Length: 319
Ligand SMILES: [Zn+2]
Image (cartoon, rainbow, N blue to C red; front, side, top):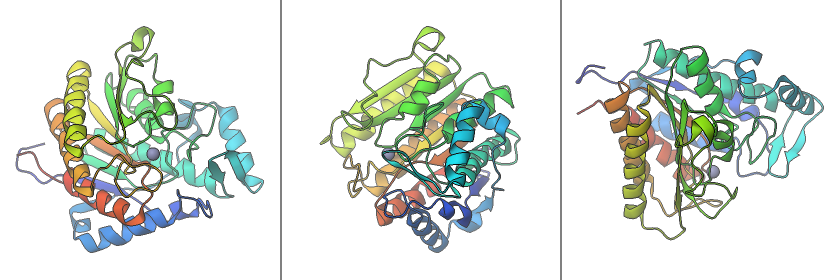
């Protein structure tokens, strides 16, 4: 993008994502209502365009999730839902809504790689980064960021994609899916030890994927400055190593100090710093191209404030 031109950002969001009804659960529809209310008052929306929310096709999902697993999720939802794993609630509309969260991620990739936008922010749910190829886990049904990365490779021919995951929980599903993959790279900063138990520094990939995974495990109690410094250093190292053509963000906001189930002591403005770090790296390596997907974040006010700062950061032009 030209140095001074405004960033063209597509925002994918829709009230339909509220139809994934989890009842009394931290990953609830009010999260998106709170974000939308905050963004509407922020003055940022006129600087964005609306992306078209669509369903992921069976083919797009099948790059990550076997057809049989997709059918299990659909049938479970059709039969009224329940809990697909101890943490993961499914309602009758959940399979359709989860398909739209993954589809929006693909549409964001299409629009950014097709040159219609510089960046995309997908505010859908359920989140995705704990979902394994054939198993729902940790509030996640389909691994949206993994589906998006596979789409960038298969549909658009990209050889190097970097997934940056700053959700407070390790993105075990994403890591597992690409652990032997030398083309889709994964960098995660997360609280450790913590749910889901993975994400140690010595988990670095295997076979052709050796070195394509970089974990930054951070102990509870780390200072905000130490977190930010470690994040930037590790991000620059991984991006320098893989030279991404596109950066995807698993943007969870549950490392916020107010988060009821996560927390790593961050304040809302720290997410502006993390966003700026990723923007800087994207400007160096891939013409600023970023597709960001909402993962966790469970304090409704802290989440909305953090997302606003994230969006403002994504809208910043290169200096
Ligand atoms: Zn999380």
